[in-house]
Length: 387
Ligand code: SDX
Image (tube, protein in one colour):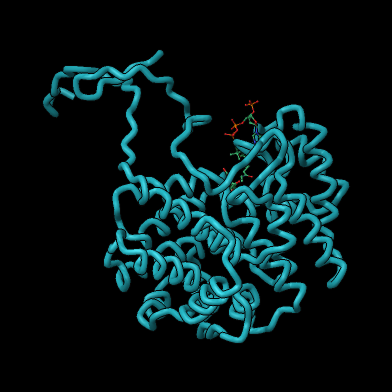
């Protein structure tokens, strides 16, 4: 047992690096069974939602706790549609971002900038909560697409009110209307990435929310956390890895070499799942649907071979493909540049971050964990001449 002193009380606690296995919240938003490969949003299996729901309906379910009626969904969709545009001063701010800047840094800066316009912090006012939810879900995609256009010197593509949430994002990205299948596949990808219990970026959102700051700062904090290669940044790394492997024949030599160097296989392994991530299975099927319509991708063949090799070599450690393993292949087929894969993850996860933000506000207590102190006590101050 290790101890730390808090005031006059000594606390006996088991320190777990990365808080592995330590509950940081009570939540009814989503549930993961890492042994059985189960993911549920408000008790509904992800496979059901992926095949029958839409991203905005799943976002409503996550945030307000139940599936919306037809009218509730229509109203919610319309509110989001009407808020897709961003202030010209945010566009002007984004014009000053360096074209070589990573889109996740651009997104974090512009998400925080929304707080300059809407912060108010009326956190006890349901109308303010709903407005913040609508604005963030509506404007984050527009900001992601705007930076992609502006970093190459082009004007951002204006959102189109006649397109669905998913179709509009793909349109703003490439100024081309996606096919119905492309729009559907992208919408399912957003649903799959919307929520995943207390992952690192959601934990950031919770800690930030617990100080009662505004929801724009909460989302900006979570975006910064998601950007890391061990978390949301893995999907971009997977494509780099598949391109480096280059051919199916090189899969096993590559894997051997990487494991010998004790390096991680991107898109594999998970703190909770010790079987294949159920989202990876659904994404794999989506990839195959897309390849049927628009031709296969040699990197998909490499990914299939790599999945088999990882299972052979690392399956005994519970290391299997996670959500990031196939998502990049789908996004590439949809014409999304690889450095926008993680911002796309963020577009979806805004729903989960906001659901946890709202849940935290209802029972708020500021996060302030303790520590295991490993330093010295009563150390002398040594004058600089004597150092
Ligand atoms: C996401 O938490 C969430 O829910 C996240 C997420 C979400 O929806 O929010 O699911 C999204 O972030 C998915 C994960 C994306 N990241 C990657 O794909 C990066 C590669 N994966 C790893 O870095 C790793 O698997 C983590 C970070 C995801 C989880 O690591 P853990 O739980 O801290 O595991 P660990 O570091 O304790 O490793 C245990 C063992 C080690 O071997 P030993 O030292 O015990 O011999 O497993 C090995 C690790 O070396 N290992 C891997 C590996 N992941 C773990 N070995 C090779 N390749 C890997 N990917």
